[in-house]
Every structure is written in C-alpha cells, then in structure tokens.
Length: 113
Length: 115
Image (cartoon, rainbow over all chains, first blue to last red; front, side):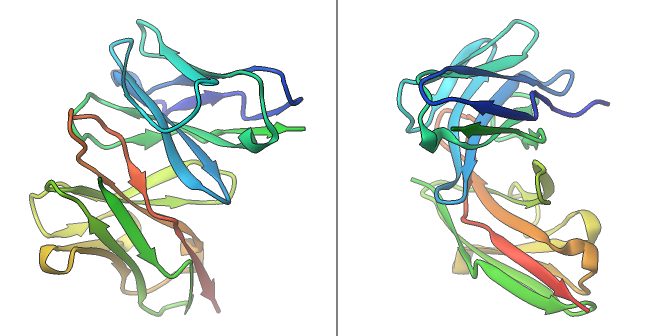
C-alpha cells in the first residue's frame, strides 16, 4: 500500500511569488492535514480537510490556503511568499475524522530567497 | 486548549542503555496521545498511540509508553538503545472538539546514541 506522497520534495521560490504544494493521501483515507515545521516554531497545524471541506484551521494568515479534491488529494497554496515561509511542509492523511492516527508524507522543503 | 511539554530538547544515551523521553500533557478532555519519530529530511513516523484502551502501549522498534493520568504524563521508553534510534522524537496530543485530527506537538527531543 503506497504511503502519503508529497510533491515536489524541494522547492526554491523568490519572495513575493506564490507556490502550490501537492499531497496524495493513502488510498481510502479521506482526511488530509497540513503542518509547517520550522526550527523556531516547531510543528504547527495549518488546516485539515475532509470530504472537500476545510474542517479545522490553524493560526496562519490568509496567504495560506488549501483545498481538497473529490479523490481526497489536497493542495496548499501560499501567496506573496515571505522569507519566514521557508519551512518543511508536511501533509498527513487519516482514514476519517475522529481522532484517527495520522500518517505523514516526507514533506516538501520550501526555501524562499 | 491542549498542549504537550517535552522535557529535555537533547538526550544522549549509550548504546544498550535505557531510553527515557519525557512528555507531559495538558488537556481538558480525555486525550489521545501519540509519539512520532523523525529522521533527518524525512516526515514523521508513528511509533505508538494511546487511545484509552490500555495505559501501557507498545509500539514499533521496541518502544513503549505508559499513560499516567495522575501525573499527566506519557513518557516513551526503550529498554536498550540502538544506534539506529538516533533521531528526533515528538509527542503529540489530539482530542479537539469537533472530532478533527488536529495534532498539537511538543517541541521535540533529539536523541543521540553513543557507542
């Protein structure tokens, strides 16, 4: 069974640009969550999607957005990139809502220059 | 609000020695607790989870954790460390209202295993 797939693995963007990251969950999983990991702030929750609807949102500015498609694949978008957005972005998939365990992808390393 | 506190950002043990990584939680509702491991440039791998079925939870790679409500703790242990255990370990809690899977993570403990 394939795991969570995140693309691309590495990305370099210029300040002010926008970026889209992709996440394909484990087959049969319907919940997808996104996290940002930085040395200073650690692991922080961005948002969670289930059945194409955002169910939960972390404390991030509106520049961070996401969506989920009918096949449960998810994308997150960051507009007007700032240097502080440089981070490892992790996607996690779960079978459903309700405190089920989360399986993580290998992440996308975003560097903003 | 839920939170977890990991005591000790760096822990160093000798190969073959006991591993003890500490985690204390704060939650106004019965928590679901997890331990994850992260190797360099990798995602997070689930080691074990507590979901109120049993207080002593066994996970992968010989790790286990005990849920102690009286101490609000969920410490991770392994009887004998191996070089391959060197990694960063994260304790996490969920149980937010609304039934979501949002995880709140601790700050992590970097485990070093020495010969």
